[in-house]
Length: 90
Image 1: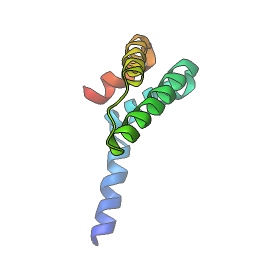
Image 2 (image 1 turned 120 degrees about the vertical axis):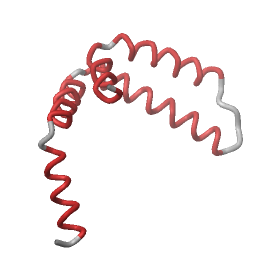
Image 3 (image 1 turned 30 degrees about the vertical axis):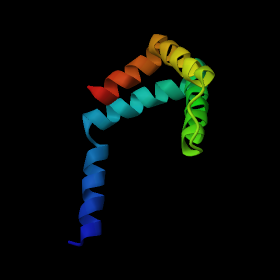
């Protein structure tokens, strides 16, 4: 059996695990939650701003830092995102 065949066999087995199935279910719930999607998009945009500033040798602005903190607080209040976080870090 080649390495690629063995890797595919392992991937197939992982997809069948209960943990993977649970994660897929939670991710689907997040995808269906408009508020969760909006929060994730906003957080990603702010993170990109922070990364761009750092890559250009500039400090992250207080505005971006505060917006990220605000978004994190809002994300912690979203049930679907909390469920996803628990599933990822359980």
